[in-house]
Length: 426
Image (cartoon, one colour):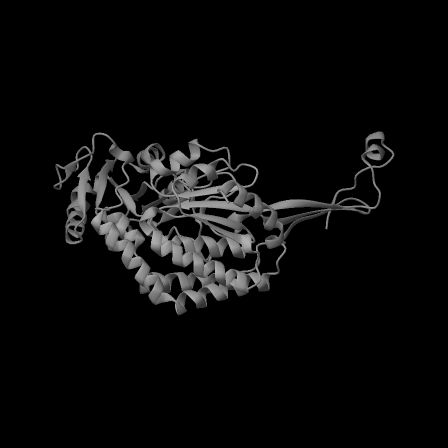
């Protein structure tokens, strides 16, 4: 059976999954958590195969970090599953309850999106996060991971699918696609697939967006900024920047560009450079930076648009907060950007005018994460302004429908003036 035929069957199964009670969907998550723990040695063995192949094939270090699945990653995903279990049901929430006329009642109720295809690269923990979020929100999920994690993804999917069916969920609630050509097949499944969520490199996400008519939710890259204002606190600035760059360099919310107010540059930059050197972070400097600290020239091709995903960042000088805002809105990816300042007025201007999904004050950009937001986990981060923005958790995986309950009313009576609407929120 090919992908198109599979997705048609999933489309038929999606209303059945949407109708399952919360207790049943939660039981599936409990089964997944327990099954992954019980079979962890098999998962780790499969992951070692993927890591060995990555080493043989010269896979970049940033990608190898992402594909590793060990005790730490298992602990993370089981904690996310526990957190997800505690969240309320996103399905069936009444967001509008209105009387249009006596005996004519309109309600707006949340419901699953339906069938969601998620295409991701080199992140086996993403497979756990995505499948569990989709099941909790009543969505069928098609999962296509990267070839770098073939063995790990295969066993993870098998265990998760088995655990879901043991809870009585429809067999077609989950599907794993493994072949590369199946991506292009999936992109042609308009009508049976309701939403695509790509996670990966800029080029990869752009390819998905430009080769399908199915709605796409996601972000192409993560060029995140931290602006250090003249009214900064050095005790906050250095630890925040180091955390944002080094805590997990391969993440899309790791900082890539530091903007520094010129008034503090000669005092602050040497201290920052020393901290970066101690953490093995290389520096590329914009105009004026290399006159203060050692810095490599900016990349001629990518310039300020560069997403390093490695132990390197760009540093630039700006004249004021408005200069910083213009820079971020011009060169950033509208992902997550932070200001370090003790000035409330400056902070408010930055938070209001920076056009990004996440705008922070005096904290690391690495907080841009569904689990850290209390969403349980995330299927990805969206820089779109339509439907969902920022880390996409349960609420980003539901839509809504309108229910209108009456007693024989017809529009003709209202059009003729025989009857009149009497709107009243209940």
